[in-house]
Length: 464
Image (cartoon, rainbow, N blue to C red; front, side, top):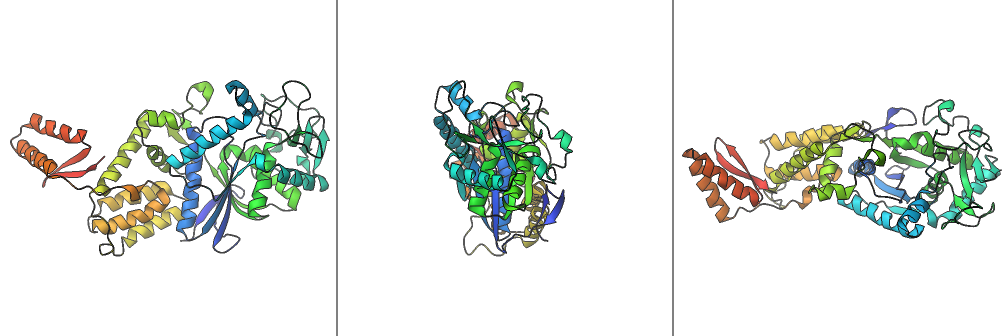
């Protein structure tokens, strides 16, 4: 089965065909580093990581470029609000550069904890101002821009299919009620390529000279500039959250066409929202969680990854602490099972479980059907016709996609004192002395051992 991925531009699943036979050029919209990486962000990057892993599992060499937005992202959707990083810096009484560095570090530490692979190239907006200015010059030369009192703006009416990616009528692609209207704009959907530093009020910390005056780049221009710098004018895949579709990615696409004369992205990959307790996640609702909230409650970060894998990336999922607890339990059970399997040696490994591997490949090739792939993993666990060495080999292959850390599970050697306690407990159970038997179970549980009572006797299922 060939790999099929849903394309947000064409609104259908397509057989994936890279521009170059064995190489994939992928651009990922990175974080605006003004605050903590919240769990909604985490879900997006976990699913982007799954996409990359599936591509690599299929034999492609992936060059992934991911930006860090450390300037230019305003609170207002249409470039009329405050700068997120400068605003955060004032509140924290730090420099904008310190804020950006601090939250960038936290972001990549969070991704590492979630076993998300590092991009091939990480590029910061502040380090690519020249490339952005050069791209704006091209757009200006091709007559897609105009000047207002507060910046250089893109004329969206010059793009015939401006709303093709969003699929929304143009009258809906307008400034939000929370954003002050700009009477100088030719069209409500027009956006800033370059913003002039304000002449009144506090001076910006991040600003640069340009052919149009001192100022800073708009949010959208950075991705177009850095994408083309590192991946060229033909990109296989562009990833991000669905919230990027109507404005950010629509504007990126418009800029690309204006500068090059053609769209440069073949496939747009978007991840659906994560809700919290059935509600939209937001600080005002008090349901804004980040990695520290998860680890402070004793959860393994990979339990959150497992939770995300249970829902298809194009479907909304609901976060609850109960759901995270269930994911942690399932992950622990998986680790415990693997820990009692025969350790892998070159002589023990044969062919693995090829039928399960085929089923798994078919699932991931069908638009990354990871929930189905997980069910195949659990079916493999229950199937006793294969040796544990063969199952272990197959599971390690599968985990190249899932990223649940199976390779790090240590083989469990049961010590003599534990064997004696299990034998003593078995004797107590035969005598129906349940109270004393439960005490031994609790004692072993405190030491991390998971027991299972079967008709053939008690067995150790693993160690947490």
